[in-house]
Image (cartoon, rainbow, N blue to C red):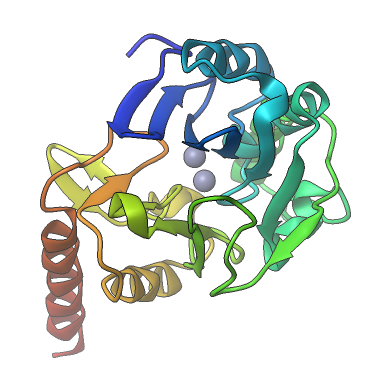
Length: 243
Ligand SMILES: [Zn+2]
Ligand SMILES: [Zn+2]
């Protein structure tokens, strides 16, 4: 998949690879919604992807972030400048996106924290104020229904976006898809793995057959069944540990 080239997941639902992470574009009539903004420098790729979809940057009314990590939020400042869109993110990640809080925690020392800090610096640009602080169950202001599902664990304010008309859920980094198999988020970059596992079980309550990831191509068949199998595997493993 060439950078910036939109791939159709369903009619009106596309993903394009920006720097760092995939960006999801949802369009309905004249209105467009972006999910995530890639890392710093991604805005030009996103705008060229929009053009390929015959969308003008001004048609993007909202950019919603799945979480605050810089491979998803680093491109935000320029995307907002070019589109004039409002920014939505979960309340618990809004502080880092807006620059009031820092990630990783500045009090953390050691090599991992030092490396993480330099990666964050390389991928980020300036902070952006979150206009709409989201909560679980909120519905985004958009022509098509887009429901906010709080799926904490990867970060405390991680969200998934459920789009019932497409039978799709956009999960950010809440899941990986390696070797044709779903797996939980990467432990190294995840704040609370127990919480992340519980969030996966919560996603099973939704009616979908497509999962859009941030770092892997979308899974467009049997996604709900695959997730049910993963949740079952994780709970069996937990029981084995307890014995
Ligand atoms: Zn992440
Ligand atoms: Zn990511």
